[in-house]
Amino acid sequence: MTLNTLSNLSVVGIDVSKETLDVYHLPSKEYLKVQNNKDGFKELLPWLKKREPDYTLHSNP
Image 1 (cartoon, rainbow, N blue to C red):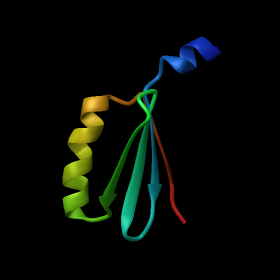
Image 2: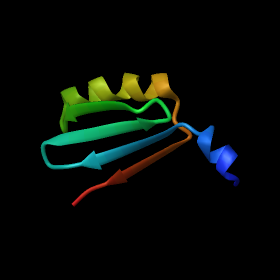
Image 3: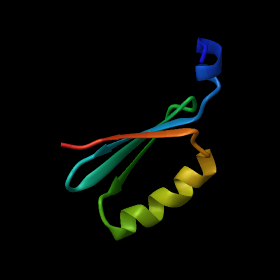
Image 4: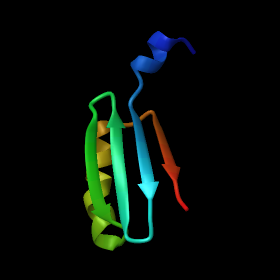
C-alpha cells in the first residue's frame, strides 16, 4: 500500500472506556462521543454506516 492509497481510505478509531466511546473518523476529522451502552450503540451505528469505514481500530484499557 502506498501513502496515496492510505490517504484515500476511510478509517474510524474508537477509544473504549467503561462509560464512553470516543470515535474519530479520517479523513473527515469528525468526532463523536457516545455512552458505552445500548443507547450509545444506537447512536453510533448509523454514524458509522454513513462514513463507510474501510478500517475500524479500537483501544481499550
